[in-house]
Length: 252
Ligand SMILES: Nc1ncnc2c1ncn2[C@@H]1O[C@H](COP(=O)(O)OP(=O)(O)OP(=O)(O)O)[C@@H](O)[C@H]1O
Ligand SMILES: [Mg+2]
Image (cartoon, rainbow, N blue to C red; front, side, top):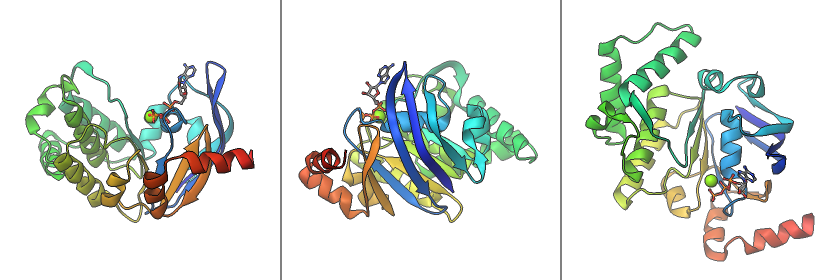
């Protein structure tokens, strides 16, 4: 279970998150929508432990562990995974090497044996097939020259490899062509499990027709202003954010 309580975070003394309460139970998929600049990626990055942000209040607890006490790599070992809105290229480090190192350090933390080369490669083949990822990409540097869609597919492949318990997907649908969107969504759906939770950040209801969320939240100006079921995403698609923003102004 991922439990976020009264989370406030700033960057360069500028408050961005202004009191977020969000609990995602095991097995649930929550979607986070909201206008550009409302703080969605900030929330994702604060969860992952990006040091550019200062948490000024509140707590983040994953399966009983206080994530704010942990460094990013420890959060990953504790079961958190974040797929970036803008995946970065890492020159000089091959995707295969990067993933093998990541997997084995997570396994070490969990007191499991390291995967040998054979086990690793068979896992790579199985999980790459889940998102129909071209295996040749894995011999290239991490995201090196990948197309926008290849980067997003590679993010979900990494998630499938690392088997996290809390998965944050930040606009994983952006840049995917229509067929790739379905393939990547199918990959995410295959990973849905009783002991795993998802926070799916998106602007588009279309993704949510493939990855059907249990709960939809709307973030405006660093606060969750509305929570509903999957029909909320349809309403937003039809009417835009004007009505939730108006409700927020009344509440404020
Ligand atoms: N260094 C900074 N100084 C001041 N404001 C910043 C800084 N970095 C980010 N911000 C602001 O934080 C706000 C939230 O940005 P964030 O990336 O979280 O939005 P978002 O909801 O993910 O938007 P989008 O839908 O466009 O991806 C934005 O207004 C952004 O300009
Ligand atoms: Mg964003």
